[in-house]
Length: 96
Image 1 (cartoon, rainbow, N blue to C red):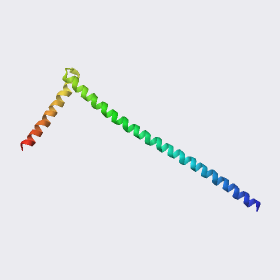
Image 2: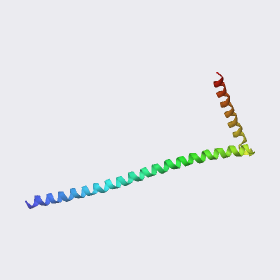
Image 3: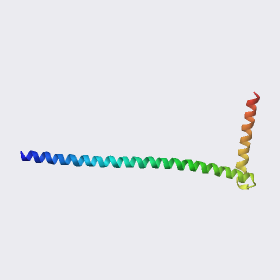
C-alpha cells in the first residue's frame, strides 16, 4: 500500500506544481494583455499627434507660399484653384 500512497503523493505534488505554473502563466498573460492595451493606446495617441502635425505642416507650407515663399507656390496655386472649383461647383448647385 505504501507504494500506491507514494504514487498518489507524487501525482498530487505534480498536479500542484502544474496548477501553480498555470496560475503564474495566467498572471503573466494578464500583465502582457495590459501592456498590449497600453501600447495600442499609445500608438493611437501617437498616430493622432502625427496627423495633427502633418496638418499643421501643410498649413504652414501654404502660409509660406502665400507670404511669398517660392518653395511651395505651385502647390498653393493648385490648392487655391481646387478650392475655387469647389466653390464654383457649390454655386452651380445652389443656382439649380
